[in-house]
Image (cartoon, rainbow, N blue to C red; front, side):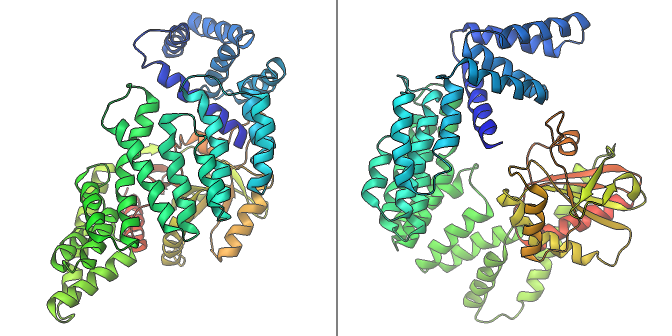
Length: 492
């Protein structure tokens, strides 16, 4: 699955960026033609679509075969996609697909950067990088970046920097530098972390300022700049360079793409270090009133209140007023978001092999939580979800189902069970494993989930009332939101 994801993702990026070029290329006209056939409801057009995709699939041009693969994938014809992926490797043994697969199979699984470097040298001889600065170079940067990070983790700074200098695709360098900076930071090498965060930020800023071609690759590079300003502010804060840190923190908090409770908190910490406590309090107050302040932010807010007021007198009453306002805003938000559409029935097995169907739970309010063991935000949301499960554990009219999907390992049921057990969660877990025929995870596909974690609240009559994706804020705020959704769903 890892190989497929990288290959499909790279091809998709090429398609998207190609459509933005001023001059129409043959591949672009092919895609426009296919898109037109897909959008049509005429039966003859469906036959033409099938004929065109089969023609592309049989082509002696690998890029045309890639188009067929991408369209079969987008049409959820996983069987045709997998068949073509295998055939392409045989037909083009030195092509891009074979190159990507070799990197996935022969380099990434190796444990040490020394082993990866040796395999990389053999791989690059077999698949020399093309000229230019396009998306096709990114696969080489993935490899050199992985090796650089490995050396940084070993505290082999010279080797790490040497491999960072092998990067080829300008638009991806910011991403690579940021990853290397993260590795330096984890080992305690704050100086090199600072150097590479700054390099990442400066590379991204060139694209953010719009000085380079209006392509998807440029937009990708530019998208990293706002967040990097706050990351760089954070590393300067760690270095106790508070005045310099403040400059970048101000950029982040003023930018609508990064202005958030989290950025406000970082800004507040810098202000506190500069003994500008009233300004810090004001920033934290914004975060707390948003309802997305985590426990650390809330504790800092109370600490500043006590420092500025001289005691904690009146704080509990003020906090209660804030909470009341948060709940009122949440109610208004959910009033806008509530829907009513039939939930698709399904039958899945739990971790013990027992089958559970959604239809058997009719009469209950059901919360579906799609997740995976590899999904960081999913796992970050679980403490809050355990709080919600605990809140309703004695309520027989509410049922939580945690649906593991989009597996990436050979033993997803065991892996999911081991994780849940290791964390001592009391979750009812169902397994949405890949169908052997269609190669799809059926339930997550039926529910049209675009990303995880993704939660659905289903009313007692079997209608979806809410869909919530992602996780942001405090555990208490998350429980408030789920609880209010459950209450509104119950009322029909």
